[in-house]
Length: 463
Image 1: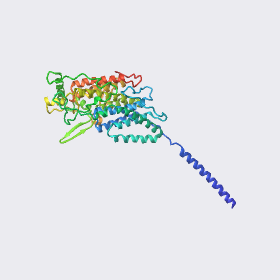
Image 2: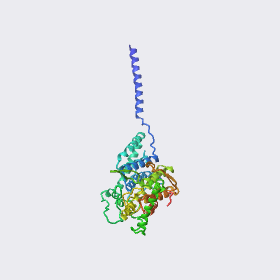
Image 3: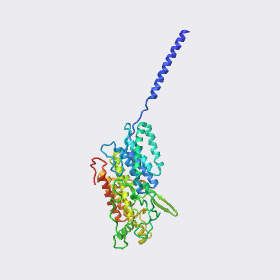
Image 4: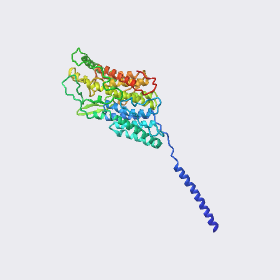
């Protein structure tokens, strides 16, 4: 009996020790940190974020000037975070009007600068569009993925990215955009035949008549690169203005007779970039949506960055410099548009030559002089040339989603020249608006190249 009791007690002791060891193993295993994966952000992640912004802008039908603003601020925020740890890039603080240095991170331990930059880009993009719900699902899916991979790195980097976004947003909110939303519409009541009038089919009001009040990024003022005046309005057949008007009509008639195979029509359609084309079917009117001129050049920046094999820093450098040039180009261009307030070819051709005539492209709703696409293309091409050099050839597939074939260019400047003349082929601009607008844009781009010291020892810079 005593022996059985002793054996039983020994057995209980062994079992207790066994379960004790198991408990210790369990507790030790439970306390172990879960394995984490490093979070890698690539240039393609930023291309995707920019593409998402473009898609939302198409959906929301932002005007070309508005779209330029939406690209610029998120790019600046992302660039600033990346440049803060890059030895060969400078901050834009004090280089951009009224822009102060971004806040320092609370800690650099577990801080992923690329992730923080992408967070800032997505957050500011979300703030700048109407359809936030088109951006947040993608953002939230990334947040969930990053949190699963490495919650500490994700939390630290997200916190910093949002802090920088808040800093840039505070600067952004002082650029006069909100104030211009409450300013009066552009008055078109006039008997002056030289003044702009709304054009068919929508007869829309003039878009963004107060855009020259928006704070520029680099140029001193909206009027700094004021172009030479257009030819004096005159319907005298010997006047320069009449000759330019007749040229628009004659070119349109000539290329229309050639049919859809005309190269000029292909060029006009490729560079149309009208975000809102009104289509009338009987009593029904609807719109077809496309990218803006600025979005087309942002697409070219993406193509060039990919072709050059750019990393994250180089990619955001390209996007940021290009978008700043585009934004300032629109401010400068719109300053002239509502100063000269010149009538469009369609209005005069219908009145004096052919009341059934229609331009190949739909006339956009704002004054004629100067050509916005010419100014923007000139500025963007100079910014891109300063990064990649002259003679950088590329295939432009930006318009493929809209059913248009690719076009090839030997340089950014060659693309800009074609974009400018496309407005003449399309029947929506006179020759002076095209030529002088391109010069204006190139001057803006060269000024930005000379003023912004973004990349240290940029040997490719070419003015």
